[in-house]
Length: 135
Picture 1 (tube, rainbow, N blue to C red):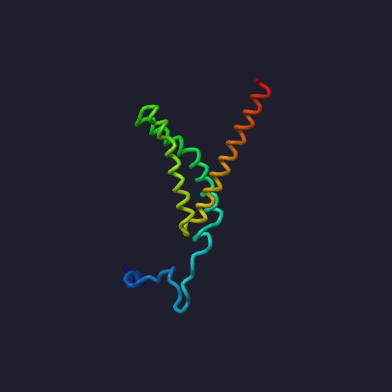
Picture 2: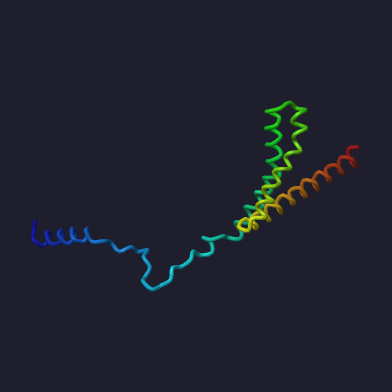
């Protein structure tokens, strides 16, 4: 090895033992920066997830509850127990009461209400059409 190569190798060995400066370190004296708005709580994300959770809640919870009751009990007993599905409405109510999840809970209630409104409206139109044109 030539003396130049030895010098380069020695300086590489010395720098390997030195602590590397972290690029994420903040300069001294500057306050720690808060995360940007999209890292904290994006307003559209909360609204959309709450709305669609309410939509799925109205569609899936009664169906899954009826399926479980039908699997566990006789048809007559499952039919008598089905009204207890109303107890599940305490979940979105609890979300509205707690301050941290209030916004999500409100949008969940909006999703539930609009889903029920759309289902009732479509059922009414179909019933009207069937009575008027099929009856």
